[in-house]
Image 1 (cartoon, rainbow, N blue to C red):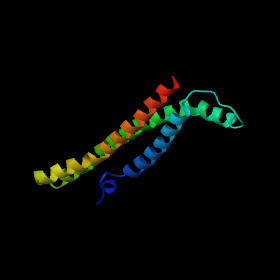
Image 2 (cartoon, rainbow, N blue to C red; image 1 turned 135 degrees about the vertical axis):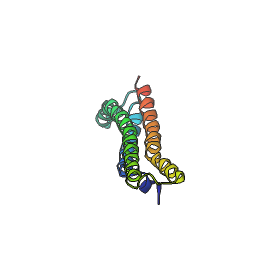
Image 3 (cartoon, rainbow, N blue to C red; image 1 turned 90 degrees about the horizontal axis):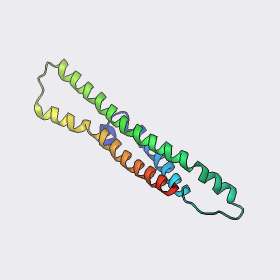
Length: 130
């Protein structure tokens, strides 16, 4: 099984939202640069630069959402695992429980990595805007 399958139902939406956040964060970072624009493309570039703060803010919100989705996925997985252990009367080996706990950390780690990357893009874009 791959990490995407073991991580739970939120892994694919987390991946897609992370890619959207990455695109928005890079667009905000590239559009945040100062300086004068001349020529016929001035209107398009000016509109892109005007949207850079909004794109940076959306990137920050997506970063937090992804981290929370990872934690929620872990909580749901642990709840399911503990319900199964309870239903069999607690006759489960410690190694099996440890393996389940280890797998439950996949989604929060993925969300944490995405959080760090997207938040770093947000900070860099905001720094360039100031």
